[in-house]
Image (cartoon, rainbow, N blue to C red; front, side, top):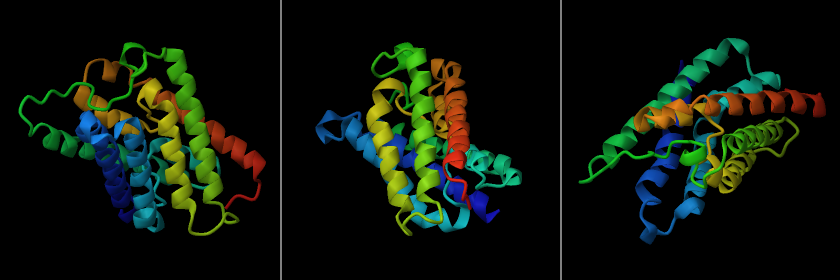
Length: 228
């Protein structure tokens, strides 16, 4: 239970910090954070939680990460569904807190609420195929970073930085395409509040990250047979 509580809190922080920076700060050009600031915010949520709860739950914060670690031989199958449930609920809690804060301003409209999308709901107008390829590849690379940085032979104490910086880079590349998911829990939490097409397109932001994570787990296991 302590692991599940840690995953709930960590995923809540990822959504509140990352999506919150997009909804509350990036909406105001005079604050100057833009896509770069949002990318850094997502990275910082992972870095901060890696050192806060990594020793408790492993700090997955993401169903795709849990699945990728399972495929890479680093995570137990019996913990997989409970972890995913805690992550999704934590993401929804984070989005709920963000909604309470954002709706406190006069004239608030929920809009896209930092949800993910493709075609007309892509920030840059990218197609469904572009979104699918982006989410698969970016999640694949994210899991390769995680599996490598947390290996017993990797430099100790730096995994959180590598993973957080990796997520920052992923956002810098893919925000224009999909508003960056690589995390079904993060996508689900925002879609529930944005509604409409964000719900209709949510399938892609479950399927693509999971496919990318499964591929990464298989490939890393082949590259590095000394898994632990």
